[in-house]
Image (cartoon, rainbow, N blue to C red; front, side, top):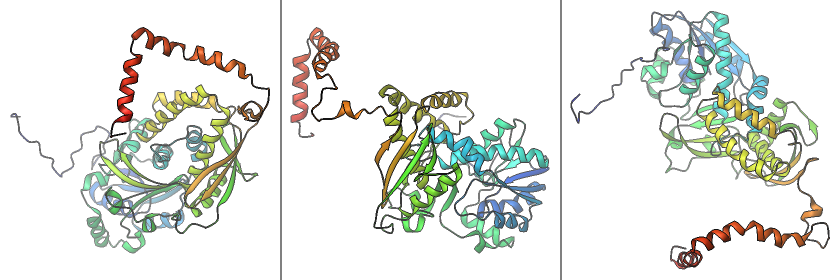
Length: 439
């Protein structure tokens, strides 16, 4: 190619990866089906363009809004050869959310709702594909998002020889073209909830993208976007206290009532959503290099992880807390980037599990119009000794040891400045900084 020649992108999708399914070779596709516009259009599109059988799989991960039986019937009505619903909500909590809570799983304020859900969906998809004799798995990811990375790498981790097709990545249709395709194939658009936003949800929260959300210069119209949470303006005028009890880092009771993981998260989702907590607006740095804004609702996750962090602050040492914050951040980044099956993540989980042995106790959280604040924490393993920390007159803490400690503690800093002869110069520079108009 001559120097300076411009490389132009062509709209035609060309399959390059060895794992991508090819029309004529694929005999049966297991399609991950949500019941929305994209996946509904995919059923007739795959049959027309691949000439193969289509079996749909809908993973029940505790979604807020979906009617699983209605989704199953819709898939059959659209021509699916079979439609399967797998309820894996309990497994989702035990295999994914348990680890997320212990790791305070947050990516810049995002509770990783979608990437956590994709992990289990990939596992179940491979299991079902083998059971029904599918030689390919299909999903509705675009070529611009994170989920294509999570799905493709996750499926291939469980089934290296499995073929994958991604119709939305291939067909080049926009939202309006999809509606036209739906009409041309007698798909009732009204039933697909013609909505300007794209939503994905599970027990851990809801993500929303599209339209005004995509433009960072525009304030999102939350009253139109939010699916489960109240806006602060519409939330109750009276605050409420919620007590969350943990055992070894995992929540086991709310307000003194023992619950299993699914029940407890649903309970806190209801309370948190009513009071408008856990709503985040974030500009993501996607795996493929794009910056994209999204709106996220995670009321239960926000309450649980806020409480969990407070309990860790009470029961872990300073060194444990400082080191774990770095581990938690790396854990979240890897999960976001679709690296759940990376060996390093197993090592991080092992360390995190070791820190949770004494993270047991009860946390009181106050909810009020979008705010979630910890007001009290108690634990049998509390490292906060009131008799030592009190400002009242007492003789428990030996204050006579404080000054000698400070002398030794500051010795290396003072010695360095003396040896380097820069104490006076440092003071002058500091003086210039605080007198500058910029400060």
